[in-house]
Image (tube, rainbow, N blue to C red; front, side, top):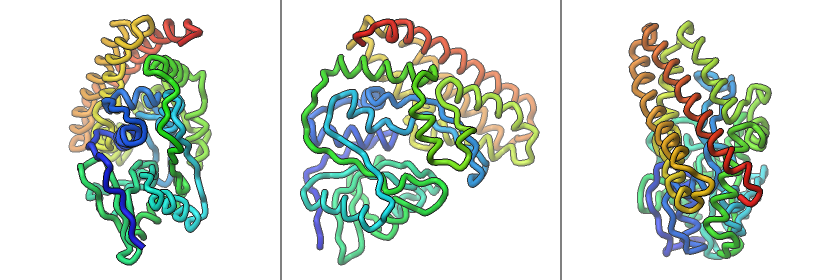
Length: 351
């Protein structure tokens, strides 16, 4: 059996989730939005920090939350729903039926096992789109964020990626579009997304923390939003004393830039969204908020070279102190940003 969806536009992206959703909502809904706008409408911004003993180094740091794709559907009022299926055979049958029906389908998995990806790192929540399969050849066809053409992946590698059996798995998570109807206008969606983002960054909404806690063996260590940023800073203070301090610096440097963040730990995308939101909802997003979002992106991008230098000079106390000062400045900027946004967004019951 062979089936492939031919008429699917693939636009490369800076980040897997927002890039995939941009391509999917264009296909299903006819919406053609900038990737940063898609990310912001999905209330994607976060700072997630948690200890993870199975990793090396033994922690993880994410600049986005766990539910951006589903939240985008919520803010826009689109009939898109995600579900998990622990049974690997049933999971494949579900998405196989979508392809046979001509519906491109969102998948999630560990990027490490996708055999077409050359950059090998364990990341269990990578997003990509299934476009087809050839069971006789044992392969499938995937739209991913790097190229504007479908990638070829073995069906065995896809199955391993979707549910690797390790301590961190999204359990064959997949997303289904039931229609292309959009019930909320863009200004309405903008207000809903801003409210979600502010509530999460201030710790009023615990959904991201709770979602990540179900995926790790150390749920008590999960911190999100501004508390996640503070947890990162607290741990950064002790890293210079570790024997493998350079590994910690390398991981965070990669988390800011290389791990498909769109630059600046996803802050580049969020800044693009706030510029757009300022025109959609000027009563909620002031120029001050826009300027602070630009500054946060600049500061995160500025932290990366410092950490990169520490990879080769992990004993340089002065560099570690500079990195700490930069991280503290980022916290101050984002604390001010989400207070400015909160004053407007949380004070407007019709946001």
